[in-house]
Length: 334
Image 1 (cartoon, rainbow, N blue to C red):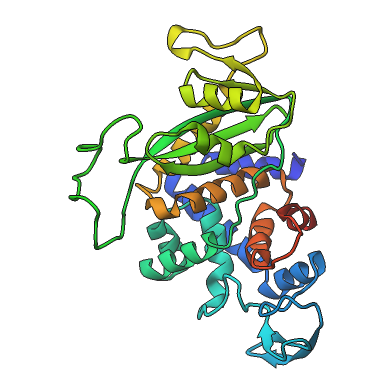
Image 2: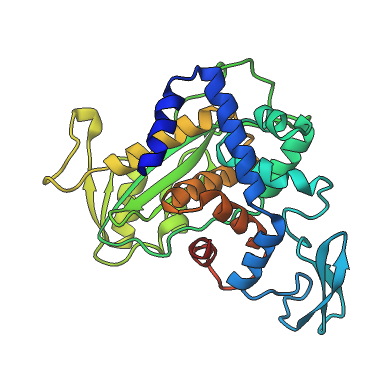
């Protein structure tokens, strides 16, 4: 830490909670002023080849500007488009507030708080959030190797926001929800290896079976990989069918490590951190659950990035481009 910043941090610690909140908002506002949409769009174009959103052709040319935004023409399909066509920015009326909203969303604030801090309505906040989340791709690891830990956790099945429920509405809390692998639960598979490759994948409603695991990670585990898991029968059946060595961790019997190497502490920590992060949203509709998993994975991936907010905004703008470029190209460019 630079010596010039030390007095600032000492002064910050003397502030009240309310004053710290006000100071943080001033910093956020300044950060949003330092990031411009024009600069972000320029970075996207230089990070990956600009393609026509209509036909994916690379034969494009500049075709003037409209409302201050660069427009393009496609030589292949003869259609026009702009930098925002097909992106999370399309049809947004208050583009000047978009970066501020990204900053607040990156912090994981609720819809109401994002709306208050950005100066928009709660409905607009909801629309913007889900427009952004729909652009976040599920960037799962291609392969796991060495020691792979797997576990599954469950979230209550939710039809939040729906006017036509499949069941009788519940009161607050878990009253009326069956425990275990019932259709009242949505299973999420957690997986990671010792090289920090990790993934959260929504599997299904109800109990997880061997076929579900085969579909989710069957082609992603390299031969010779050791599978670490609990004693759930589906994991045992999956390992046997995939001809994988398996190490069962019998946590309920007080066992936490096998042979001083094999354990599931990493996925347990992932589960604990994920649940803590999800609690702030007071329930998520199950149809959006994978989008929230992708959001959380994105934040985790950006922790070591020198410009995380900029990289987050870049990933959202570049997401619609249908090409072989992975998210890593965008993040490394930021």
